[in-house]
Image (spheres, rainbow, N blue to C red):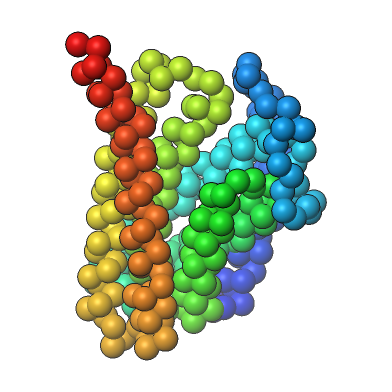
Length: 264
């Protein structure tokens, strides 16, 4: 019914961008739930570097809104990725040439989301970590864009999108904090455990496998693509992900363990 080509990918990515803009206004009322007691006043928060139609005046509500949308994307993409690996075993056989409608549209959907999120972050993000996130999004968009435009290496993008399975729990972790849900809550503690396990499996192990598989397929993926992935994308991800893993591990487990050890 549909011809899988760059036109379809760009069209679906554009619809994805519009979908997340629409979701932004649908779920906005949720940002009023359980406001923080010790809120910073707007005057004490630095203004974003760029103001657009996405710019939000309330920092706390924007963080909640941004994380809610990120969680929705992670949930949709995570389910589609797991479904694809379950239903299409040929994905395992050839990450370079594999493509079908579901996997291609999943990749295009994520491309549209990252375009939306990059606009949202540039318009609202404050602080030094903004540039780290922007760098991550830019190299991710280049990687996704090359796959979508060339209709090749879609299997590698699907493999990389396994990270979104972990993002379901990683974003939930931050949402629990933003909505002031206590750490003692059963679901918060359960999420901590699942988050650290899926982080290791779906991010670190996935990144190791991609590093090995791309080297294996270096003569098939193309010289320029191999240079970008092996010399730019993968090194950046090997810097960002282990640092983030340690931060989460320390905050959720090691710090608490040290405190209990000192008290005993």
